[in-house]
Length: 261
Ligand code: F6R
Image (cartoon, rainbow, N blue to C red):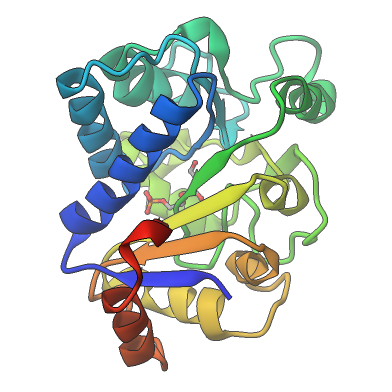
């Protein structure tokens, strides 16, 4: 089972993740960080940036792999995940842009982008820690419900719901691409540590399914139950539909301090 940590709020949950990642980078300067986009990890990125700057942590060797990228947006479009990661992660943290990757199909066609990306991840030595958000429908990366739990990086069609959810980043839904290249669920499960964050009531059903529901491709986030080291960091609202909420809280409060996440 994933470790479930129910924080007071997004700031506290993000700070637990940021502290952990900062320490990992200190211990392993060429740490391979799996990056999510969307609103969920933004507070984590801000806090990690602050820690890196305050403690002057050397991040020049940190490698990064985005979970996904839209198909059809030029790289320099402000909403391409390449641009978003540049703006929210690479520039503020001072990472080396040459070591940060998005599955953009730069080298070849969109059909070969998945295979190429998988090779890049392998060459980097695999992802040490994958940051994840979750869609209201349970998607992780852009693996929409129905995605094989063994899937690899490939092109996917976004659901209308995901396009509507993401329309807030664009002028209108018509500008939201229909397709993306996303790491597969099988790819994500190979990261050594999964850290999924979710905040707000709109994520409560997806989280209940992820943590306590049956493992099923109908709820891609439930694949976390197959991973030997997964951490789910929530605020009170996202945790509100968990049946064993009190136990998770109790376990966290009584956790030996040496254990970390
Ligand atoms: C983004 C991604 C998606 C988002 C999910 C939640 O790289 O992989 O799975 O994490 O759509 O989005 P937000 O955080 O905006 O609610």
